[in-house]
Length: 129
Image 1 (cartoon, rainbow, N blue to C red):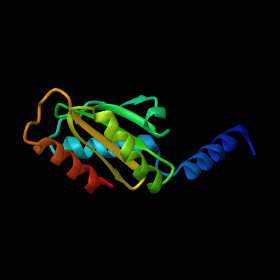
Image 2: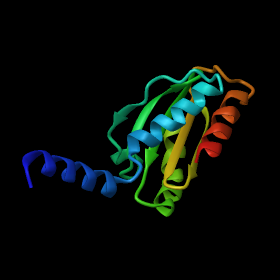
Image 3: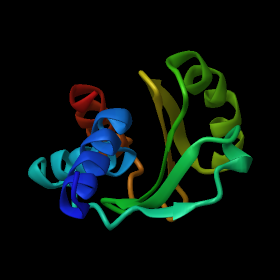
Image 4: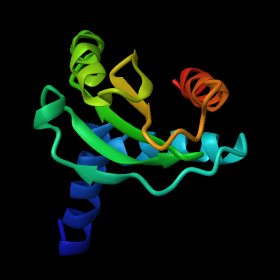
């Protein structure tokens, strides 16, 4: 097999082993928020250790601070909800796991006094999963 054949074979093996990448999943959720008119920022990678070793990203959606973490399985994501709640502090917020993904929302700047934006973000997130 030539060099080009090895490169193609290697790429195919990687694609099959990875399944839906974390980046693709995060991008799909961000795209759904955009489609819903929620104005998400880019989600930048952060250290997931403080979130029970998830693969985490952070940004904002409609003025709400967002942290999205992916875990090895749904049980790990569900267990991480308790940790996510502690990261909200005194702000209004929520931590919710859907499948292998946990979302932490915190309104630290008081942009959502009635909770409607947080509810819309959660609804779109749940529908995307």
